[in-house]
Amino acid sequence: MSILVELLKRSEEAVKKIPVINLDGSIAGEATLPKVFYAPLREDLVWRAFIHLQTHKLQPKGAFKGSGHKYSVESWGAGYGMARISRIKASGTGKAQSGGMVPSAVGGRPTHPPTPEKKIYKELNRKEKKIALITAIAFTGVVDAVVKRGHRIPENITLPIVVDAKIESIAKTKELREFLEKIGLEKELERCKEKKIRAGKGKRRGRRYKKKHGPLIVVLEDHGVSEAASNLPGVEVVKLKDLSVLHLAPGAKPGRLTIYSLNAFEKIDEVLLGGLK
Image (cartoon, rainbow, N blue to C red; front, side):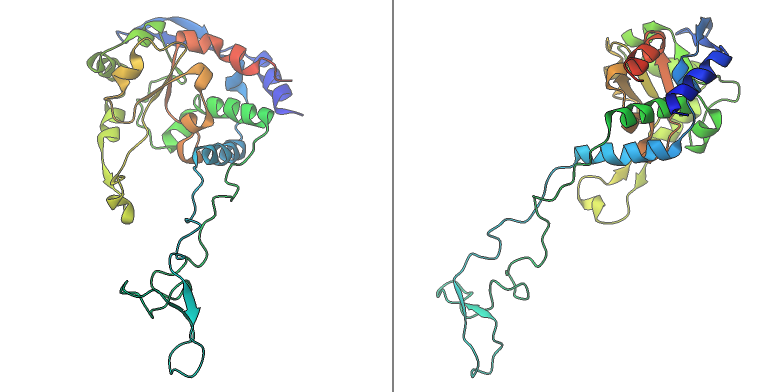
């Protein structure tokens, strides 16, 4: 049985209602749970899609083709009581008679350098990518998966979290922080503030601190909420049309705490199930 057939079968068996939260923290109404949240929880599909999509961010790298080939070199041969490696012929450079070109010499060519021709872009089937995204969305509605990722959520909260469409128009960080605190995510925001110093040389390369992934806000249209979230550590905003496994499962671990605007929540099935057979 295909995942899609199983998905449709499960969605027909039960119709679940999810409370819609207003900006003041009160319940504004109810919304029907989309079909994608009934998808089977396949962590292996999410992992595979994450690894493949992550390679699409990589840039080709490699050593300079002329690296270590700056000087004219020649081996002296035997009979001089010296190693028979290639030696630099140029005079007046301070490098004359020293080894060159070979990997064992200082300033010589790299031994096995990375090549820019190496294939680092992994292909992923279109349907497999979409099914993995549907599965990742389904994980956001499972409390155990969200808690397992380390998110701190109140005991009485209902997942997935659906908020009135007005959240898309919040333009101030203070207002967005107050709303998140009203729905019980104070401890989650505190967790995201914690900094951990990276081990290793990365500290010297512009990535000294490791950041935590906090709530993800999915909207249909961005009317300023992304700017409001930019000053809240760990909080991200993404449009529904741009939603990816990379957003929903950082580190290939599904179950990220996700907040859906009502507009996006009602369009999920239309966007993701359209054209999938």
